[in-house]
Image (tube, rainbow, N blue to C red; front, top):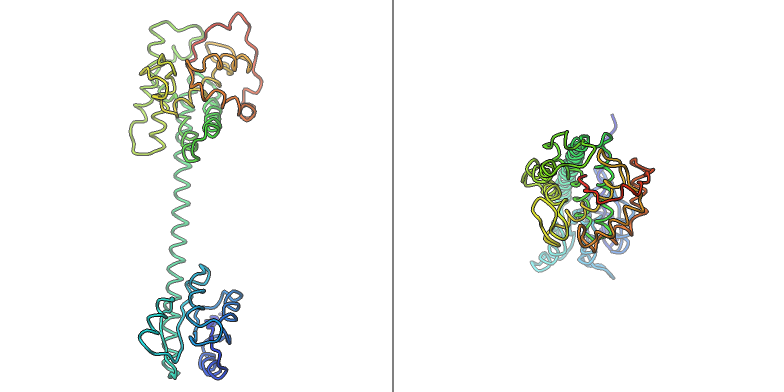
Length: 366
């Protein structure tokens, strides 16, 4: 069984005899280091992270003990090391200045060896206890942070899986929610939103069509044009989605609720379910609308083949100011290389051209 290392104590005094006496008393139970002036003391402390206590004279040439102590306490690395002033000064004012500089105790010269050892032992024990508690706090903080990361990861996975569950009703791969969440992130970044808001939109956007769980497969999978009655039923899915998510007191879920409710609103007020106009539509809904439509148009759906990128951009440009926020479309196009890279990574990398005969108005319900 190894013997515990002796605690290291630094004694700082410009008088050789005082250093000899103090280090001699300490050496039996401690590793005693010595410095003859303030600057040397600071240099030693910088090189010896094992120092656990400092006995410091006040009256020294150049840098006095008060200044040395203030330097130590100003450095986060050395601020916690206890400093005991070992000095001939004994007035109340001297003690006040010492404690204000950061000292934990005063020992007046001349001193008894038993007094020195007792004070050193007490403050070493307090320092050891403080470091132990710091260690426990760090461990528990790290464990809490890891748990928080795990919970956040689980929550995000649940959101994505629920979003994919809805998409499986009209997208057998379920990759639409992955692509459009990345498109939403890229657009939100380019639009200058804060990193926190960008992250929320990225994480919440997969839930945009969760309301499709409440729509009949006969409507979602219908290969032809919807009847007026069927389209009216389809228009209910944003409100259904918002109702499924509800108001949970979570910022992430609130953004998901807003996205689900508003991603089919149109800039000119002719969208659904509430016919909101312009900037009355939350920015999250306006961003996701662009990402959602781009992916829906360039992907194969039961009611249409995939459109070419060129044709999709042409239509989206034409719809800026009617369907889409006109300020966001140019920003989306600026990030097009990144958007196409996402599209290639998560499927649909080859987009089939659409015959001109089919390039009529298509009502995108994706």
